[in-house]
Image (cartoon, rainbow, N blue to C red; front, side, top):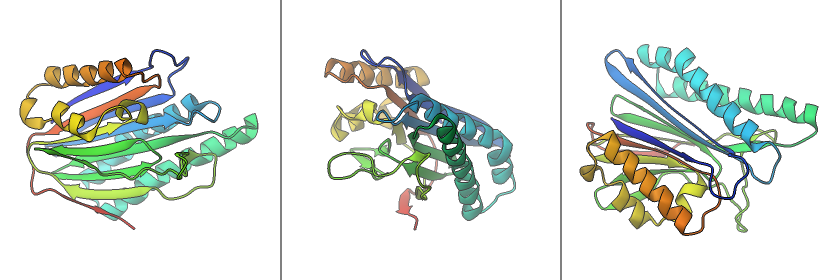
Length: 246
């Protein structure tokens, strides 16, 4: 697995309301990877608190629960329920915090887990997870937005609602890109495909340079928002497919 993280406040933003965590651990000789990107809701106060709360909780969950779950070869439903419990606890913390401060707050969340030739995605909001392979780029997650572009769902002090969940198997030469809207908004899917073509990337240094190149390009095109991305290149695996969960 080749991986790299891009994290940029942007030229105009006063604070960075994005948060990111990327962790890896060996589970019975097989790498378990987790990438999480959160984007605090700009129209609500303390978006940076919401996003860092979730990434911090995800990191704690990874070492406290995820490693043990995969070591025990827990089923997909067990992993799913564990992640949802973690998200629910984050929402409860934000609800209580919001009541104390008399505010509403929230964040988008896109979480990718990869282990043993399989991936799991948990998503709410308008950050995204892309699958990039050969000459195509697939947006795996669906944006939770209204017709006017406003968010219809987030993780926060608002009413709890289940997130989107997807799962699939991997194939060698596939890239995953998990990113906030500030990173992908000014890039086309064709450009993402060219930038993160797994066949042209063999080292983390090369991947880091491509993420930085993308970041410089979006700023040159006028992007002023925070921008965050994690890219993972799968070097081995099995047949690829994906499906939405109910």
